[in-house]
Length: 150
Image 1 (cartoon, one colour):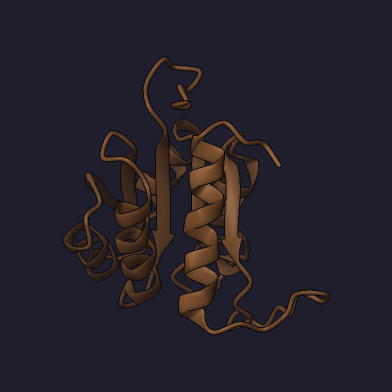
Image 2: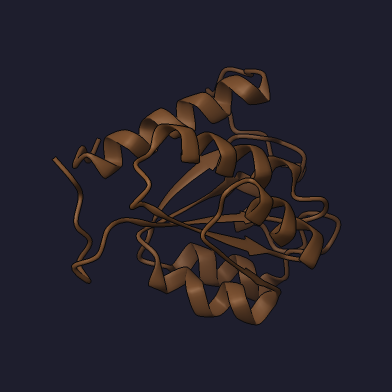
């Protein structure tokens, strides 16, 4: 079963990252392995280096900066990245309050990695190595793509 979005197209996933784009690059590469090729991955970087890293990992399109994130956040079906993408001034100040607000307000389903580099610790979440978290994220997005809602 394939998940068709409300717009009649296949699933569009935004991967949001900043700084060097390392986490976004790993997420994008793993999603490319796990999901069918018709799933569109949009790289949204807080800076050009992050966007380029995600494009090299297999994102279909990329856009950079505050306006790009504000514009695209409500136009995708799912948003993924670290929990820091919901926190104003995270990523050494690269993630602006407007970016965080746009991501939080987006009707897209959010699939976030519980990394506490932004000074936020999520209680009740077991600490796992990043590769394990990204594998779990990819499996969860595949379930979402296949029509699972839990």
